[in-house]
Image 1 (cartoon, one colour):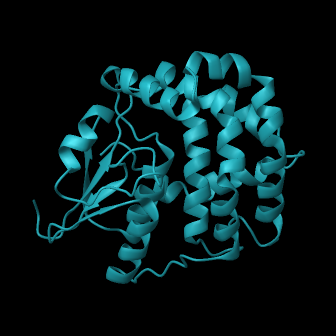
Image 2 (tube, helix red, strand yellow):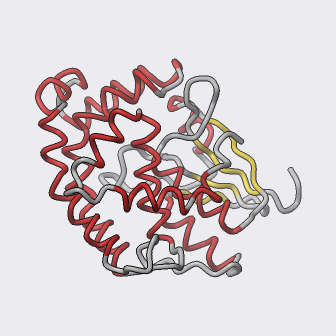
Length: 247
């Protein structure tokens, strides 16, 4: 490993392999923005615990879906750091340039209200991720782990909560996020012309949705009260840092 190389652990998609998962996208966007030298080590879901155990402390019970999660990074000195927010805090200290504001009222709101968006949206993404995105090695793990968290099978989640039901349920949260993104007319970022970590946090979700499929993306934008363009404009604005997604 090169002396300045960071390793980003990410979940691979079906071939051709590309980043898709929203939490790793937060870290990937950050590393790309900072211009840091890194490589991706792809881990299918069953490989995550065996690879990371012993290198990073497990998450406290009840705080994450599993004891070991992606994203995790390995710093050049061999230190492992898990969780996208912990990674952001560390990288901002170790690499202050170019500057990037980490905390903001918008980020605080998004983090506090994320469950209001992701829980109803599970009727869409839980069944579609294994069908459209996951490598074969991760599919069984996905179905088992998501059923355990949901308290019912992914098929039952799709039947009970999917389709138009899901999009109607996410509409209030999407309208609130849209209004917040429009607050600064200078745009396209939450802070106007200056990108911040909140933009990477939200863009990661948008990239995830778009990777699921253009059909899902268009339906999500239709939930924004006629202003879905601001989310498309944000994705366009972060393109310099989202184009690297395969290595």
